[in-house]
Image (cartoon, rainbow, N blue to C red):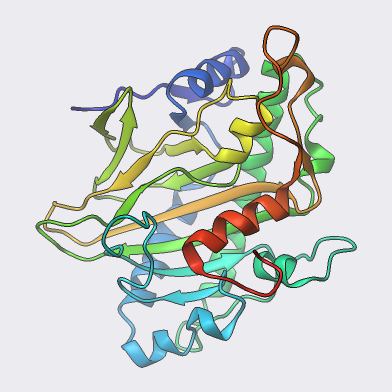
Length: 306
């Protein structure tokens, strides 16, 4: 079954209304007229392929154990996104936002901020990744502005909550395979995921209990919502389960960008999302602490992350 996801023109006059409708119903949508140059997208896809083609010893030199587990190389089958299923059939290279949170210096914060690891064999990779990272931050903030307008809030309502964001960029490679799950069923943890789905399909979403294939639409990104945004909106917005099944017989390279708020942003029900007939369903929580707990479930512990 194919997923008929909404297509939202970010420059359209009705973008905020369409975005809210998509967030309340599918939790997944395409965005177009996002302003990211096709040449940059092509460059980072090519850079990702070049990295994954490096000899294993070069990749292992960037192993995530050499950082604080949110940066660096993750080998094939080193993660189980769905703890009840087999290990993921993917390898990854992860980068995080390098600007540290104000006033936070504990192990949990270091998990999500810090210096990235770069392969010496590909000196051009850093410039490409950092340029793409900047564009994803821009698009993420633009989406937050539309979310604010959709709820009748000022367009800059989230601006000071996302100026030092928890953010992660992943380069992902799924090998050729005839069966098996590239990433197990899960919901993302942050607020927004902005995905370049690459040139090979494989993403599936669970909508109304049915797994549906997500088609490739040229020059668009696929966006989905994470658990923190669902909490923030008192479940008006939905975090939709999804997975990757690569049965194409081709290698699949994708680039997801996970966009959260600042570490110390207080995630509590937006005023317009609760009332006497719909009380807040979740207690307030700091964004960084919530994310650290969810990451602990998948990646294991760091001091203070429990």
